[in-house]
Picture 1 (cartoon, helix red, strand yellow):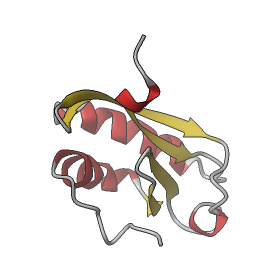
Picture 2 (cartoon, helix red, strand yellow):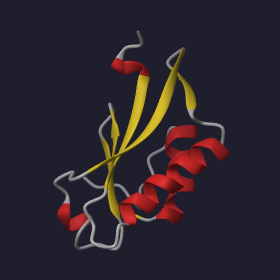
Picture 3 (cartoon, rainbow, N blue to C red):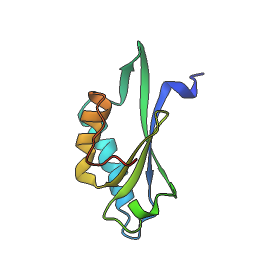
Length: 108
């Protein structure tokens, strides 16, 4: 059985009225496959990457009132806001592939 630490999870809020969170989650899954990053080599071990939707991340200012969705990368805890489907390629390539936070989307 794999430990929970061997999985990187991207939790995407889907509590928006226009359902942009579902579109973001779909775009992230497509980009992970397209860029070949469904599994990452980090710290000498392979880690699976999973995109999961959730009902609320308690970041409503970034979800219900903004044009995009909120997203948390677990276990590291990076939080992104106002993420739109077109941002998926940058999150997958820069954050997951290169290890750099996408500053224009990052929330403190």
